[in-house]
Length: 315
Image (cartoon, rainbow, N blue to C red):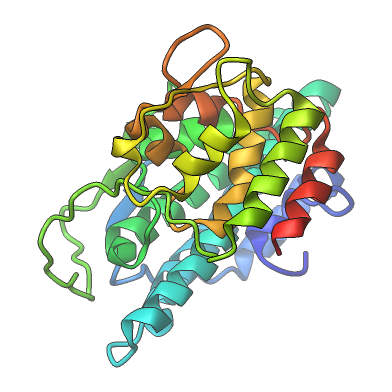
């Protein structure tokens, strides 16, 4: 399989479900297999059920090697002489990569659950892959989270965010008691929570036009809220001073998708900040929570193409 094991195993055309090798073939592959040394900068370790056949063992070792190699590469991605902007850039690149891995794995699991074409061995391997990438996400946050403007998620929250798994077994990924992080985090005073979504552009009129078009397309707001009130809140220097509540009319899946699409144009427009503002009210007249947005994150909501086309006006 070409490319990263984290993407190749869940490839539609060349994924794990396409591997028809026999047990004897995996035993042969294991006979010449060399394990990657454990990453000395690792913070976490995985506890997973022991593989009981050659196929499981081979893929577990393959995934383990790639995981350790990726964690070890953090030291190269974040050199000691790098500037803060350079480290922020490196963090974003890696986080986006892990985000894609997790979304691809979730899609693969959901698709195969419907078609029921994964064997017991394949389920074991894919779940080990899932745990390994959750670990990568957690390792990156733990070691270099100071370079991120995004909220930090616990391991449980990562599992729920990407796999809708509210009962994830945290004992599968535990902090190591013997390993220490090589790169020491820079000490900083605890920052106050941001009270602005941080719209990046000075041209706020285009944002207003985009919001009006989206409101017409998906019934974004109910009649208690105007588009101008939402626009004023999004560009406010301090959203805690805004008097208006934003009453949503659209489906939560649509609003969650809209938040994802608008996020690049803000410094802090995300589910955590939306909940912290206390300004967004759902169709059931309850405050919108970050967890509700995460649970309703889908890649193909109603009017997806129309939303995408309208958002492109901000670029």
